[in-house]
Amino acid sequence: MMLRCSRCILTSDFPHIHFDNQGVCNYCHTWDRKWKNFDYQQAEAELITIFEGAKAKKRHYDCLIPYSGGRDSSYVVYLCKNKYGLKPLLVTFNNLFMSRYAIDNIQTMTQLLDVDHVMVTYQQEKLKQFYRAMVKNGGEFCSICAAGINHVRIDFQRRYRIPLIISGSSSRVDEQSPFEVNSTHPTYVRKVLLKCGFEAKDVDAFLFRRLDELTVKEKVSMKLFDLDYQVINLPDYLPWKNEEIQHTLEKELKWTTPDKHKDHIDCRFANVKYFLKNKQIPHFIFAQEKMSQLIRDGQMTRSAALEAHKKLLEKEVSTGT
Image (tube, rainbow, N blue to C red; front, side, top):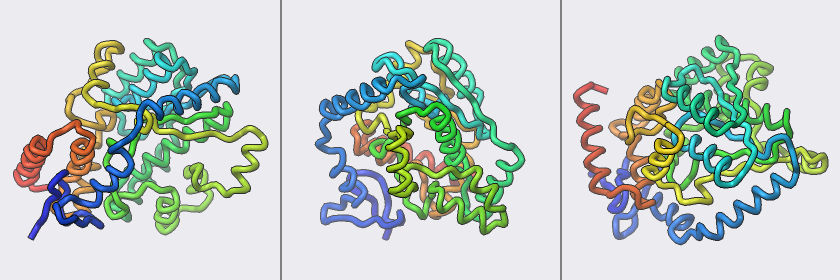
């Protein structure tokens, strides 16, 4: 018998899920331990201290922001520039799937906010080969895009010795896929690509190591030579309400979207991404993860999520996916 969490809408076929006596799943309990009594006033004070420390270094840029043109990264740019007075460098990885909306938003916002921006296109044929290998052997392609974003952010952090990398992702409001659904960790991606026959030099040239992969000795060396940097997710410090964010961006910065209720409007292949992820757990609608996070955060009711899920399930049946 299929069970569903009494609080969110995750079902019993989701990896590693279990329920308490009230039918509440362990993913909800994990969320509560981190976020239920979170002190945003204290968190923002900590955030401002971090920002002041970055400004005190008097670098050409105070922070680097990976910028896709989507809602969350656009709001990060807006806050860093307009509210906190940072000097940001925006970097965009051209994953070859960028939507017209994302490109237009990037052009409009960088002009209105008067910020520096670079778009990087990696070796296109090699990138396509990486994508094909991951789809065939890993069942997804998002890990290559994530590796590309990491590549450009580390590259430009090193070039300008930027003390902060700031993103718009969060464990509070974004879906938290277990490994069975998706893994974007460079170690996993490297293993798959090497197994597919790519040369180590080509893989290592693309897969820059993240901060958490560096050895203690490497981190100490960076600190001694003032080359170290900090990575923060802005929604982990501030309230992050999707509707309010969207209203602000549309009103003040002419940000546009084809669908107010859709995430990842920056990627033309977002539907393919969800299709591939859904295949990994039969009949599981991947959007349940995101909706469950929004329920926990009070941005969506369970009844509205169930209705939305019902429509997605009907669409899946009608299209045969």
